[in-house]
Image (cartoon, rainbow, N blue to C red; front, side):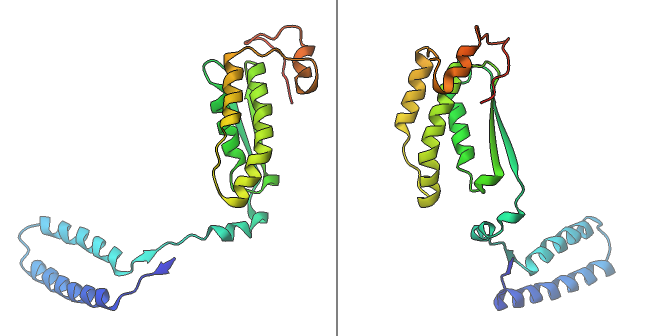
Length: 189
């Protein structure tokens, strides 16, 4: 909060205040119209705000010094259907949340897929791989880079059905005999 002081504005304000007080005294002595009193009340509120103008300047670099004061934040992203909600939109949301200028040890991002979609999980795995490269680079150099390869992988996965192989990250999907969109067990990864 920085006060903006100007001697010329201050002198003009004092002259206007003197004329204003003279006008109020004249109107009080010859009180015929009550509407002018309301106008004077509103005018005085307006003038009093302009007597001490203030600029608010923020210093984001000071926030970086106070990591201990910031609370832990849990962010939940929900999706229900990969057809109605394309996976690329969900993954863009997740990547945007991961790129927040907030301490990484105090942010947790949870993705809840109600359809237990293999496409959404594949997109999330690709987003995690992409995020490991992109988020530190973005934070270090404060730039936005193109993510066309990530977007094309997710778009291709949304167009073509993915068969979940029984190895690696997709082993959870192969253990369940049949995953239905509205009736499935919880999958936590």
